[in-house]
Length: 320
Ligand code: C5P
Image 1 (cartoon, protein in one colour):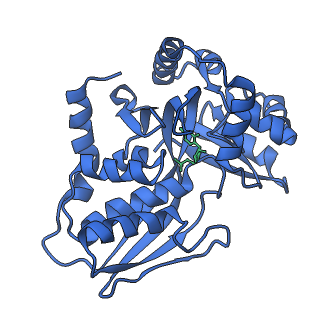
Image 2: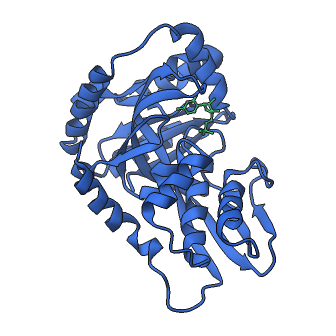
C-alpha cells in the first residue's frame, strides 16, 4: 500500500496527458479503452444499499476497444458500434458519461461516439466501465472542461463501481468500497505479466452472481485483515514473478457462485490445468478465466492448443 501523497503524485503523472488542454480546437479524438482482470477479488459483506464491499487487485491488460469521439454543435449524443452486443441508448455506460458531463457543463454540445468492440460484453473484464471512463477522459479534453483528476474520479464512481480504476490509467491498483476507491500500486509500475484468457461465449449478469454469493454467504463476514495480508503477499509475488506464490495467492469469492450457476465454467479450469498451467482464476463475476504464462512464447504456444474451441474465445494479453 502507498501513502496519500505517493498516490497523488502517481495520479497526476498518470492522467496529466489527458487533462492538459490543447492550444487549438480539437474536433475529434480516438482513444484506446483497455480491459481489466481481477487478480484478487474478496467480497467482504453486503451493504445496506445492496452493493457489496470488496477488496480487489485490478490489473489493466492489453485487450482494448477503440473509441472515437466527435464533437457535435447540437446536443445529440449518438453511439455507433461494430458490435451487436452493446446497447446504443442511455443504458450504455459510455452514453451515461457523455450525458453526465453534458448536463453539468455543456448543455449545448453533443457527441458522436464510435465504439469498436474487442472486449467481450458481460465477460468480467470491465469493458463497459472502461468505455465510460474513456468517454469521461476524452470529453474532458474535447470539450475543454479542465476537470481535475479527483473530479473525474468522482463522476466515474457515479457511473459504475469499476469505472474509477480506468480513470487512473495505471497497470495495477487496489480497489475497496464498491471497488470505486482506488490506490494505484506504485511498486508494480514496471511489472508485466503475460496471460492466456479463455472467455466463455455467454453474457454473465453481475447482479446474478452477487445474489448467488448472498444466498450462501450472507451471514459470513470475511476478515478484511486476512485479505489485506494476502494481497500484500500477492503483490510481492507479482513483483518477483514468483509463480508458486502467485498460485497460492490468487483468489476470487465469485468463482464458486458463478460455477454454481454455470457449471460448465469448471471445465475450462481443468483444461488449462491439463496444459500444465498453474496460476488460473476467474476474473470479476466471470465468465472469463485467465492463466498466467511464464513468457509471451509460452502464452502463445498454450493458446494454440486451445484454439478451435467453439464455446471459448481465446486471447493472449499482457499487463498494460
Ligand atoms: O456498479 P455497477 O453498476 O457496475 O454494478 C452492477 C451491479 O453489480 C450492481 O447493481 C450490484 O448488483 C452488483 N455489485 C455489487 N457490489 C459491488 C459492485 C457491483 O453488488 N461492489
